[in-house]
Length: 251
Length: 322
Image 1 (tube, rainbow over the protein chains, first blue to last red):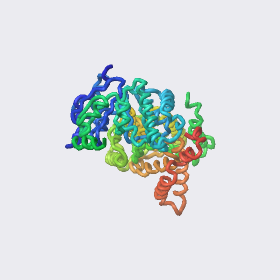
Image 2: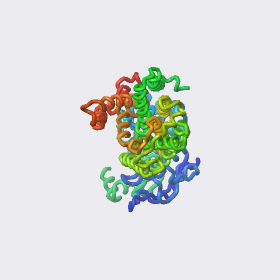
Image 3: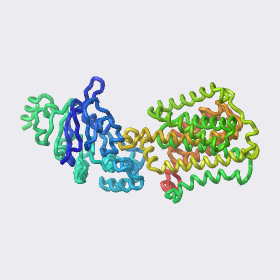
């Protein structure tokens, strides 16, 4: 196993607010790493630093041995990092197929339009959107838009996929089928870094978990280790003693 | 070639080619003048559509390229004694370079800020030319009639300029089609829909936008050189007429933004309408007010324009109407 992504003491500030504070962790090739934390913990900001939307003030980000800190998002995308957004961003007036073709044409493999179309069709089949290929993206429902967001990222044939709450807002059946898609992506050898609030899902699918709170990394380990870490419980529930007593009462 | 097997390519190209050829067949001078204006509008609208319709940047200063190309071409012909064709091409090259530098700067702005900046640029260039004595200042320049001898006399020169106008119109429509159906064009459409998402998808938006801006500058520059050569004189007020840019936007919205055929249909329809309004005693001075009301009505009721509406309403026509 080799390291595909190295986050090295990354700090991002907005004025006086430190959104990401000296966060470091490694991501191994082929694993699924869950990134969790309460609202406002800096998870999405960290994603924005990784794929170049923001340049971090301090620290370095290495992707496959190359320093990508502060590179523009399109350059990062070309190197093989694709992203599915938390708030879906379909290209509304374009068809579903065209949306995914954009991902394929401008992704890591820099395909021609014709090749990109073919890859897009394969990927639409894979995520189960094939019959919607000619529909305008703006006309899809939320679950379909989430799949489209995923398809577009996948069509880029990335080495690393950043998934930002792709399960949020889905019903249990949709969550289950999306989790199958995520597992199938891993089978293809794509490394996944995912932000997720849905605990049972992220605990279930991740190999390892990193927990952020107020911009700082407070825990890292297997899902089980993290779930029993008092600091994590505190971050989610406030006072650890109160949390423990609540848990006791629950039993 | 994929293009040559695409019916929608032929529909757009043949409409322009056949309409353009009609006055050549009839030999009618008034027909030629009408069609020359329509072709010029087709050039302005089709090229503006690359930035406005495909990339989603509203450019109120598109006419600055027409004026610059016109001035450079006119200067080279009237003062330096160049032939029309190299003069027009030189005007287009300088205008393209101007657009590249300008685009790299103002395309960083988005939405209303970009639109405002384009108005400023047009007015700034106009003010510069007004104060530039070598280019005739506020009075402008006039063509010495002797210059037309090289083209077989003034009457013949009008036909030469008209023939070239057809060529430039065809080139601008073919370019518009080429961009629309290319990977580059798909990237522009993605920028139009959501520029930040496009960046994350791997589209180098700053470069793509600048290339689109330069492409859109070349054809009005050529048209400007032809128009003012034909006109025989050039002055800042005619060359940098801000409301021509607005009329270009009306044509695109009328025909259908982001389509290849839309600006062609819009340009022809608007020219006919404008001709009627200018000559009708009731509406004579209200032509621009009418254009404004028309623009409002289109945006409220048929935002996708004529061609866009047909494409949405009858999906089968998409094969022929690009």
